[in-house]
Length: 185
Image 1 (tube, helix red, strand yellow):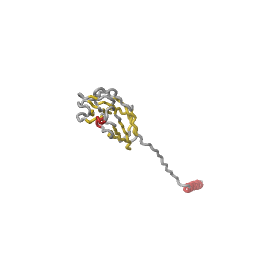
Image 2 (cartoon, one colour):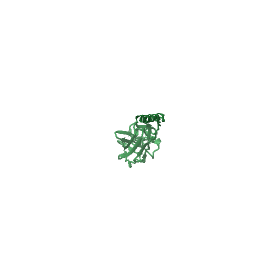
Image 3 (spheres, helix red, strand yellow):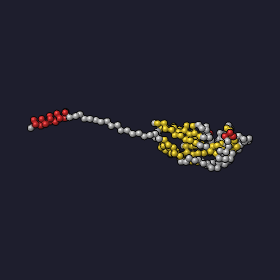
Image 4 (cartoon, helix red, strand yellow):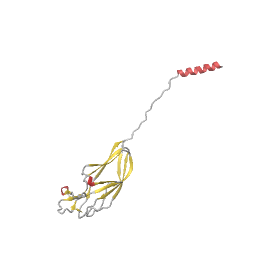
């Protein structure tokens, strides 16, 4: 009996040694996510209403939703560099070195009337003034090396004129463009 058992075990071993070797297959698993950055404003119109003779207006608060799945740069550009009076031709607006808050209406010989008004944007502890904008140029705001998904509160404030300075009548406007540029991780 022992011999038969030994022969059976030997036959099994012989069969194993004659069988095909084990095979392994490698499977590559992959996917892709596109870069995506978006700034969604709570509003696209900031209307201060009646500015009064010196540009006194209430603060305008709005929340922006910022989503970027990579690092990003943020920049802003301004069409006018300030709130400009739409009824005054640009040839009649001159820089006034004595005031950082406005541009003088040049036909005014007394130096009292202005046809431009500064405003600020404040978010957290950062404030950006329209006086820092050069019309048509892009100013960098922030750089983030990390993906972001958050709500950003922004306050828009008028910088009122002081002393005897007053605004010329008419509509005041500017156009801001905020650009979010993905930079990668």
